[in-house]
Every structure is written in structure tokens, then in C-alpha cells.
Image (cartoon, rainbow, N blue to C red; front, side, top):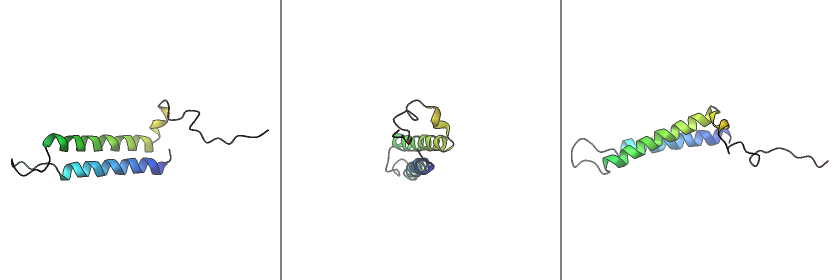
Length: 80
């Protein structure tokens, strides 16, 4: 995957985290629109997505099996 795809994953993680933080319920009992565990899952899932995007951007995902398999390489084949 190229760097633009990893940046997109990182940006998506930031968006999900921001959405979870924006909809987190206030300390008052009837002020929140979303349950506390839903906001928690949004924030944690967004941060995990950011971590995956950052690891891919730094090149640490190349060692995972299946990412760099023979079917995913764009090698030029000769007709000789």
C-alpha cells in the first residue's frame, strides 16, 4: 500500500476519535445523547485505527504475513 492509503487510514481514525469525543456524554445524568460505552468504543476504536495507520506509514506493516505476498507485488514480467 502506498503512503496515501496509510494517511487515509490515519485520518479516518482521527475522525472516528473526534466523533466519539464530541458525542461523549457530559457528567450530568441526562445531558448525553450516546451511552458512555458507545463513546468509549468510538474513542478506543479510533485510536486503534490511528495506531494502525501510523504503523503502516512508518513501514512496520511489511513484516505481516499476507501483506507482501506474491499475488500483491506489481512486478514486471518479461515475455522472453
